[in-house]
Length: 154
Image (cartoon, rainbow, N blue to C red; front, side, top):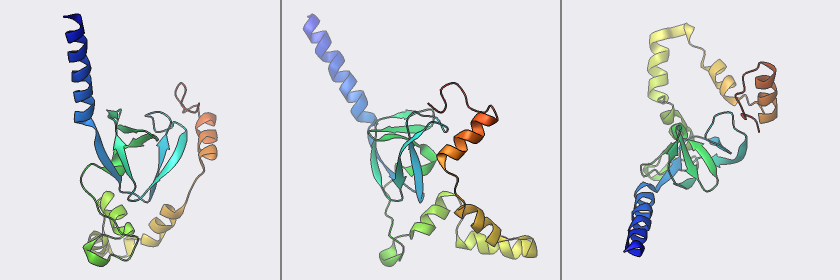
């Protein structure tokens, strides 16, 4: 009787885990895999556009993978196809997927530019998107400003 209960509990636990497990696909050029499900947790690696992971569950807006935690805004659970940049065969280019993930594409940019005229400076936006700050520099800034929570950089 006790053994039956143990087997039933184990079967239910495995069924629950299997029911959640899903494949996620990265939809941004690159994003950090984090040590913990926190935006300011140290990175343990980098996930790149089109890379697939098995999600073991969602915690605080982050998918838990075997490689680390990845923020849900950077991935999709839908089937995704991305190309390396030429867009041949009906696939989206890497830039198109990145823009679409942000809710912005070439048509939206053009329409916005036409409506707002000279006030729009996409070159400045492009320059900002190319800017990169290293993780060590980011954590130094956050520490100096007292902005890290408990264990945020450990």
